[in-house]
Image (cartoon, rainbow, N blue to C red; front, top):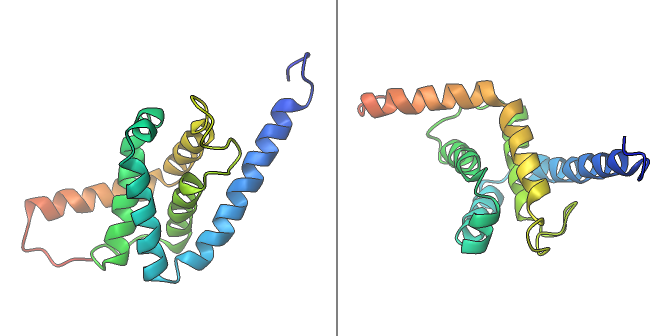
Length: 150
């Protein structure tokens, strides 16, 4: 705890958790509609097409790409082995990313995407085992193009 600003760190963490919880609640509804998930993916891809955004989130861009790829494979019926809990976390992270008014508003130069990167990293680490399984599936699919999608 900072002696100069007692309670600030705790308050920031509390707000970040609250904001992500709201995104998670929204994700529980979004995952029920392929149309809503596809719309979210389009928003994420549009955001990632902005050079300044790509620069601000460059440390987590590969993680975001994996999350988008997993969700896309799921809703397109190519890979259905994603547990619902994992799917909700994936979608919640993407909702948090596209929300410009999360803990630190995205339009603040230099720091607007710091909290987004933190959420992406947290979710990535939380579902790492499922990501590993997805990556293994992709590798097997690449080595066996005649395999049946799962």
